[in-house]
Length: 380
Ligand SMILES: [Fe+2]
Image 1 (cartoon, rainbow, N blue to C red):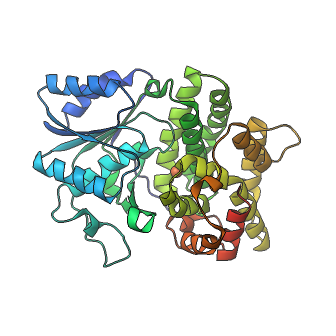
Image 2 (image 1 turned 120 degrees about the horizontal axis):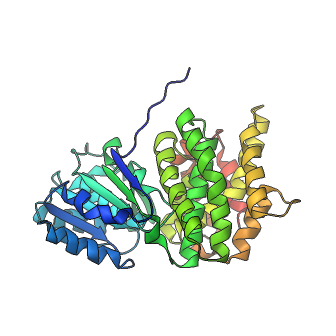
Image 3 (image 1 turned 90 degrees about the vertical axis):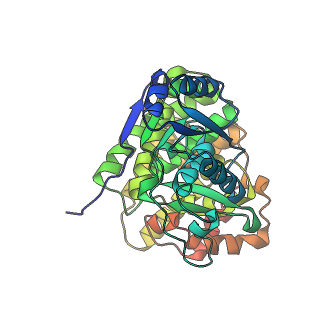
């Protein structure tokens, strides 16, 4: 029997209306709180006021898009100046990643870059992080349940991950109502991220009985919710997508991902919504993985299962799943890779770097640089 391990938030609260429990739960974690947030969700103002009412001293760190090294440095400095004893991040995946990086690096000394795998000297070991609560306001990354924070390095136009099992938030509080009314493009891109994460967690050679159960239960409702939310606002679909996102985070934290996220980590440094990039790459990656598995005499049964699910929920009966997903993405106007300013001559280098990306190591089958270049080539 293959051994496996499970890491997950110490406590998770999921459900419509759970945000009412946030002030007490966060105040119980510490009194000198750093609140990491974006500007999009007005409820975070109420959270701030409720924490102050409970005797917490709150320092706000504003997130401005996906965190880069400077944003992490500023957040860490703010937390150290505040003598913070806890972190709460309320926002999308970028906000939660910034919160995790601050939680992980504020207790240490020295520069944030010393702790990151930037390709230079070996990173310093991370100190024990501050206690952290994560409250997602988008449904996609599942960052509330994962053990890494993605940080952009603008100089090299790449992203790196601060990765440590201790970075899993202590509390994940998921209230799907916080995603109600989110703009459609954001909703679809985020949803495609959750779906890609569930699919890659299901296909990876590192899948476990636990991650299989998570992916199998979450994928069909997530695909149905994606189709619904493309057409209309719907609270039940919001609930299903928020749950899929959380479960995708739990799954990927315990199984790893695959070549789609490997490629996305390399080209994501050029801009573009992470989830839209993942959704665009997924069809060609499914086809490329199926071909590589067949060539190696390995089973493609799981890819066939995924293909059938995609076709059933997103396509017409005669479609393959890959074709259905491609058309769904085109029909709903999600940007293509051509919006990323990725010149033809850069593609071999992108494929080479994706080959050694940490996510790619979990791909169901070993791919060559040429295989990865072909996936990129077949992605519009
Ligand atoms: Fe992702």
